[in-house]
Length: 302
Image 1 (tube, helix red, strand yellow):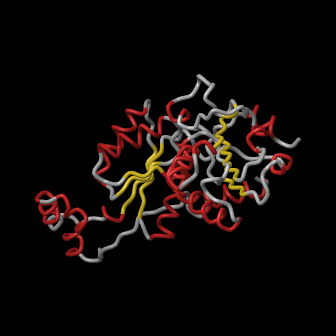
Image 2 (tube, helix red, strand yellow):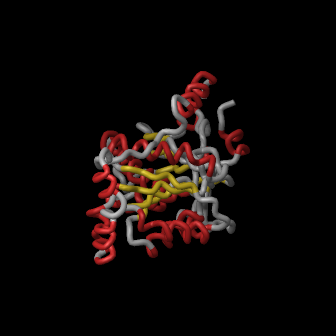
């Protein structure tokens, strides 16, 4: 990022008022009667109705149009684990997108949790406040267990954006690109650089769309994920193929699709030339910090 853009970004977030979100009042509050309806004694009536039937919360409160964007700050964009407070500008940014493009209100919540279980318990206890929960920037593999547990425990929809938001957009784009290039989805050879939450979710969805698992070459910081490795967690192991490919160069040879879900500047022009004719290249704008600087140096064109 250029110095001018850095300065502009900081000024944008700081002035004229810090942050990007605010709370607005949706009912009249000019008279004493208005205030008596908004708070005591009038507020007692919707309280009683919700106590009778919890579904009435959607009728009498903002619950149905309120989403929580929640993070523990362990995988902030491509910046890694910088802590929950540092993730706040990102969570506010996601709130801006909800409000600007869908008219949905957002509370951003940054959880300082000492463990995945503590995070799960925190979110579970506050979930009924909201109509839905958007999990954001939580590192893999913990994010998989966190999402699974919250789906089981909470009565409102749970969505992990880094997984499913990225996967949905990627799958739609890839299906369209393959059609335009005259390639069949069940024959396409796919290279996925990155093995974090977004990468794993993208590959799982692409398999459900017709990509064959044996045609996927996923790479983490140690290179191609293959069946001979004994250092794989259960999520990476799903993509371990019988192959003699070990490096990014090996994987790119004859590939139809490249999907970048790690960090910037990792694919060189020479590696792009190794791909099959009419290649398809996707670069995720919200990458997982999965690839180490050593791999970046090894694959960058310098």
